[in-house]
Image (cartoon, rainbow over all chains, first blue to last red; front, side, top):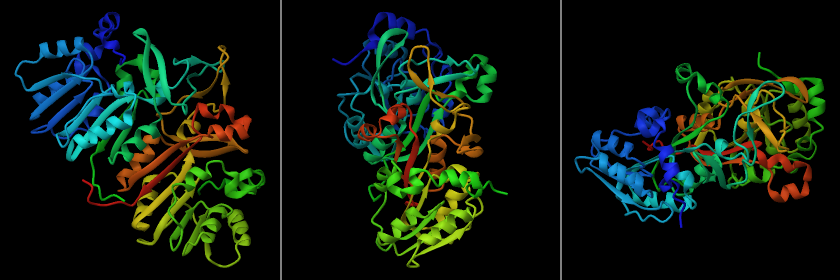
Length: 248
Length: 248
């Protein structure tokens, strides 16, 4: 039985109050960086893995995508997403990313925001996505950065010297991490940056770009409460391409 | 005037006593991982950037390389390297990696061990290396991992909870770091993992593999004093390929 924290009532209520839940993409400070990885949407067939409330699915449809399939495990989130959609250009599907089946040669863009760190068998999913992409189709995704997720006690610590540091440990030991985020006991999968990228390369993708995202100095000027955030990355953003099989 | 710490007498004496200086490649615990990235050496034209005492240059020559060019800024290290070489198959050259000129279409393998974190203009060097590679020639290198190099106060810290952590800060702010390593005031350039890889991609390389290296559990069994080393990576190992210009 896959973990489905998003259908937990307490979690769902708190999650629904986050900036990114209320304001959508404009409430996600990493969105401009992630958006810079996206091709023009016109005529693309788009798959949105872990679509949540459907903010990205609606953005892609509004930007001219030929079709959008939004997938999520949470019935509550899909229900909200369906209620926000008006013109029928988006299809929503309930599925678990660890067991989802994807038709081959189907999509031009597979997008996933902050969902893949819940997936247990990521090698299998990257392979399935690769087969489902057409031509030089792209996979663009974000996950929590492994530096954020690794520690046994994640949270800023003030040292005797006065400096505030991120207490990194366990980075090289991959596996589940149980974190208290909105509610207690949310389980995410810790993988190193190298593992994410080697899994992509091993599935045949070409790596196009990545970003270890933290707020820019301009964003910190607007949000002084983020001033510590340049000390370690918060998200890992990746752009990969289905690529050429001719690469030796 | 480039920093040339390796010709500092105190530094040189201490550096000469390190396992990796006395035992060569077998004294470098990351060597097996780095070696796994290397193609068969037979008939290759090899460039060794930051060759130091010439351990890798000699290994490549002994393994059948057609030619080996070892480059270093340190006259002391080159002098030692030349004295260890007997049959004339290796050429040694004194040059600064920030201003080196490389002939185009010349090498099949460019190797660099723990030297590129001293280079100020790495984009320029990656471009020069790319032009100097032939066919699907490879660039294989190691650097200190950015997580190791970033902190303002690098060293294990014991928290009140009893756990020992790596005090990460400054990760997203790139630039020189002055560290006390063997002697005081050694300057290295901090770049994020993303920057290393984006610079490679931007120069036209295909990324083949990377490793965020720390000792394996087997190595820790042999060296119990390394038990903390799984808490953060120590080296970043990268294998890249000159690649196809057809990638969009």
